[in-house]
Image (cartoon, rainbow, N blue to C red; front, side, top):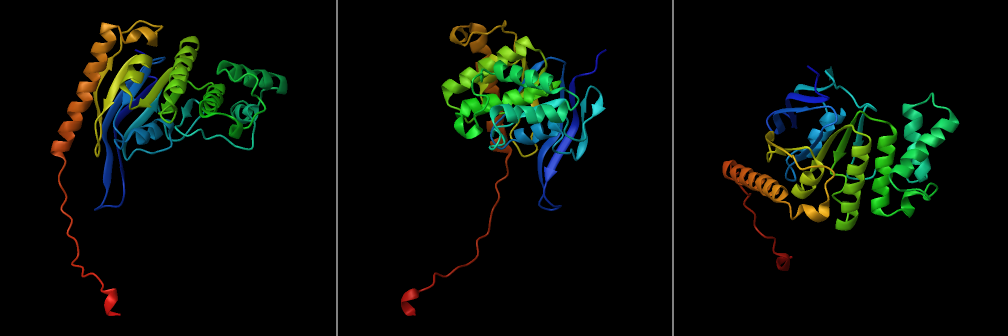
Length: 283
């Protein structure tokens, strides 16, 4: 039996000193198969970015393990490419230079001619042809995110980690980039884990949706397989009964667990000090 491409096994993560410690994630378990596209959906503040940092090797687990192909993840590596919410581009380098820098680090043995062709391939892949020598400050937000995607893909990672990369974009640009990511994934299959708070985005893009419960002590809840045929046409999905049923099912589940979390959350009484207003007229 093949090992999962990515596995989170009984992971806990917390922050702060003993006595005032906040447990962010508790007993998180997840298995992602090779070439599977998994969307993890959760509310703001539930620990989504902490979970993504765990997968990327940027955040150690207090308890449990993260494994890739059976090997424990202890640090970042080019086999796990991550696309952040912010673009994380070097402003003094051109489009070509930003991608080339990543390629040089991962493939130092590549000849100059091969490296140039390799970089150009990924610039073309994200439709930035003609903008090779522009700097990030000369690009729109959508173009910067395309550049970030090209840089990440150019490292040929086995696993692509998407940390809400489209959340700051306008609706039209977001839709275009969703389509670009789906197109690239279908052409060059690899394992993808995407963090999002958008149910429609998750249903459109993923093979499986996994809910992250509200924090603190957030964990992964119910898993929803997405069995819609690919390729998926966003212009017709809203008329698809299967799409509407799944979207409503996921939305109801998220609303229900949020309500349950609010009911279980303990109210904290904060005692305020006795204060007397200072009378400046008496001075």
